[in-house]
Length: 300
Image (cartoon, rainbow, N blue to C red; front, side):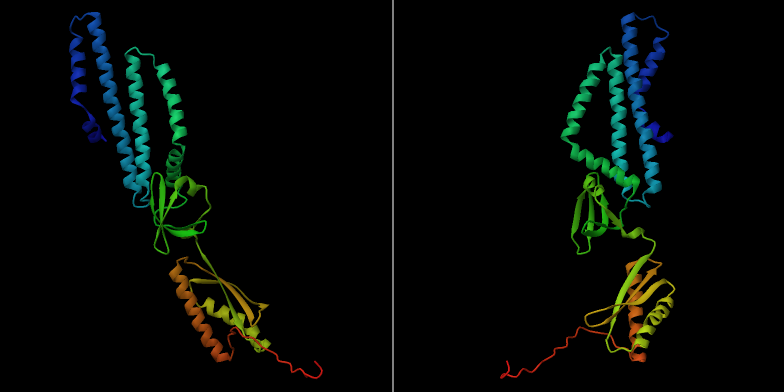
């Protein structure tokens, strides 16, 4: 911080302070003394604004370095925060300098307020996206690298900007959302779920004996519970389908990663095929039975 402030120190401010200190030992006219004091005051204000800007830069840079690995999108928001803070510092410096020169800043502040309202109305969409980006970064509904779903669109967050957020879709294209529109939507953040709910249904042929059908849920339970990453929930013979006896199963994975789910489900499917082959149980497939009735032409 000391290095930052030292780099912001201007030789002109030091010169003005030196001139003011030297003037204390001189007999100067009131006009010259007043003019020197005005110049000194403006110079000190200018130097103070530089120092405050340096402090803002130091604090933001320190926070950015501490958080950037955890949240890469933070750099964009901190840049916006720094710009707003520095604008406020220099606006305050300008108003205090004008007030010291004897100008009536009340009318100026009023005019700036009216002009600010007009500009805000003209740029309300841009400003809405800007403040929405700050809300995204600090509230963190998602971060860069998260897999999210917005409406019917799904993809991985690549960049959170001041106006837009960019998402890489599963098909490869880039989706661009306005930040304010994004926050106004329902967002599903798949990366933050603790468990993955998995459900599947298998169909048995209608000629499967009831005792074998009754053993299938217990068989599935044993297979699911043999995987440490899986937590069995339920398995039941629930419905009579058009061509199959349907057994529905639900289990949870402690690791929500999709590849873990794919590997686990594949292992369950293969083991079911082996067990069914041993038990003589057949999987159902779409079939139709067509019944033909002979009609005597004489009787119609």
